[in-house]
Image (cartoon, rainbow, N blue to C red; front, side, top):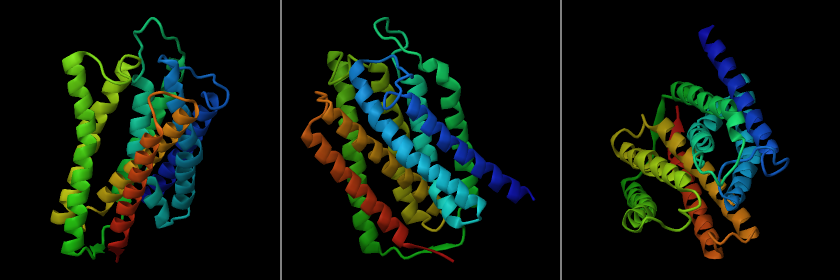
Length: 279
């Protein structure tokens, strides 16, 4: 009885969060432009890209995952566990990441705070449920050679990613500014704090667990890759919108790099999935 209640409850939460993302995206700059954020006008280009992914990718994953969970399909759990970290990142950024004390910027996004809060709470509920409901009886078929190659490649990938942010942080410490810093310093620090303090450690831990507890870390692998794949989709969407609107903070070479990262992450996700077997 409790299991049924939890399954139905989480499925309902997932679908509600999916519709909230559609609602917020519709009210945002992509359509009605009723939600305005206290930040520089050029940042709106990034918001357009974020809303595209929220409305047409994340909402679909959440709603489909909720429906499949109601139907007792394992795929529902697989879909939903990909969403919580993205939801945390998105909602925290939108609730906190603006220049609230800057007198030159105006906005009304504070009126939608409880929607962002609902996304965070919903993501937490989804994550806790999916971690407990994820298949426990799994075996892996990782070969030491391919796993070693994968591990070295992805550790280097994560460290290069981290070094980009660290370089900009050091530049701010030494000079007081860096590329794009002056227009939105709060957003700058929020993104780098989350990436370096949470996303990077999670990625490194997921690789460590492949060597020490591969069968027990199946859910963690999905959680990690679910976040990175959905987030890189959002980054690509943002960069495309910035490029189309002639934003000086992005170039064609940036877009190519982001597309390469998307391919790399998809390839890693496929490698992980293909080497797990549910008993």
